[in-house]
Image 1: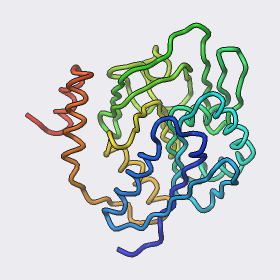
Image 2 (image 1 turned 120 degrees about the vertical axis):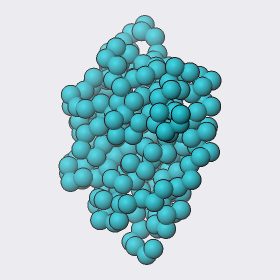
Image 3 (image 1 turned 120 degrees about the horizontal axis):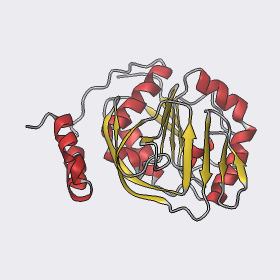
Image 4 (image 1 turned 45 degrees about the vertical axis):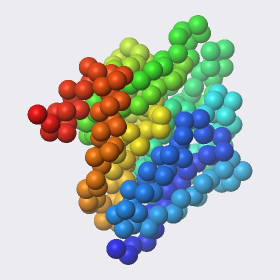
Length: 255
């Protein structure tokens, strides 16, 4: 197969690097290369200005409050170009801190508000003395099926868009609504990490299909042999979230 390269931008990996997001980049790259696509990864540090006209997929990972504040300032400086590209269909995968920054603001426990970039109708607030929402999580997505991973966030997120999915085990956006993440335009926002994509190959492929379509490349992805990934997911769920195991069996077509 000979096509132009698909360009994945990893924004601010020098700051948003808490949750092994390099593993997510590795999964995206490999799942494309195994199917014959050429891939370019742009590692955009906080000293650089993103060029959203070049990218076919953007990844924003997680970071501490201090790093998020720095990244928020950098993102606000390029928000018009970012917003225009997203409205034109640029896919974005935003995880934990990166997810929070897509909204209007993130309010710290002190009450200070860190302005986001307003790509989505969303706010996140950390409630003083409230417990962190932390632990293993499983989510049901009508698009993907079961999504599994780990969550660790103090903020409670509310938004006016479709959620990524329904919480089967864990806390999700706010620990109350039963919703996790966000799906709007080609934005995939979530608190699930650990890293996210090695545990969820179907989600990786869904994000890649969006990116390929945006790049005007063939977006029919041949099936890969994901037996080891599915076995690892099943073992993890059986050990940590056994009540979710029947849904995994049903998803895999097991008796």
